[in-house]
Amino acid sequence: MATALPAFTPAEASLYLTLCGRALDSRQERSILSDTTAAEIVERTGTKTADYPHAKTGMRDIALRAKKLDGVVRDFVTRHPDAVVVDLGAGLDSRMIRVDPPATVDWYDVDLPAVIAARRTVLPRPANAHLIAADVADRHWIDELPSGRPAVIVADGLVAFLPQPDLTAVLRGLTAHFPAGEIAFNGYTRFHVWALKHYKGTNSIAEAVANPGFDDPREPERWNPDLTLVEEILLSRAPEVAGYPLPVRLATRLAALSTAWSRRGTTVLRYRFGA
Ligand SMILES: C[S@@+](CC[C@H](N)C(=O)[O-])C[C@H]1O[C@@H](n2cnc3c(N)ncnc32)[C@H](O)[C@@H]1O
Image (cartoon, rainbow, N blue to C red):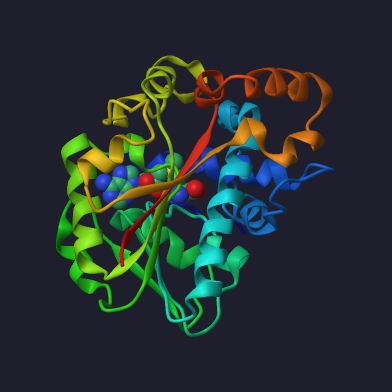
């Protein structure tokens, strides 16, 4: 019998796009992420991927950006086995299962209360996994995190839903809380935000889009001077593109010729802070 999920608000319901994108990718012969847990959750909750057309058109970008963010976390916890991992706006993502960190790492998934309640019903929780039910804009939740340890913080698909003052405040709150670490998220340019609001496949979440977007990957350094851009990953130039079907591969290779065009596609931005 299917595990029914509650009716979500448009911001919360955006988790279906990424969940379905990863599930669809996992069923491809040349899957990028092989996230079979996403496929199991879709199945178990009776979620219809056809209800989320953007999940199909965007599945490669969704899977590839998750893979790059997984890589940031995996790399960090390998260097810092005492790390704290924070996944902001975690939705029903099973990043912790994919990354499989050492037991010495403490992992925090943060999302709005209805989503965290849903996570409890569909995802296993190892002893070092912690859930925080909170609006990230309400910075009190940061006090629940351990301090004094290096931290890697990721936000996959969240930034578009945060008004700029809230995004700035949460970034500042996190870099003030931890002595050092990294923050990585997928970039949302002003074009992305416009597209999210106007594209038919994402209009169910359009009203929840609250961030204006930013075109310069160095812009977050101005919101929070503790941040230093380490890497801008242009997915159009990722080696995984070689496995895309021919028409998609050609279009992606063409975009890869220009940084500006690549930024119209998906990017993953990685910053460091502290010592
Ligand atoms: C596009 S989904 C991405 C979910 C997940 N990271 C993934 O990749 O599947 C965006 C997520 O951000 C969460 N979210 C949006 N606004 C939030 C806020 N103010 N505080 C906490 N979570 C928020 C939503 O509930 C949703 O789960």
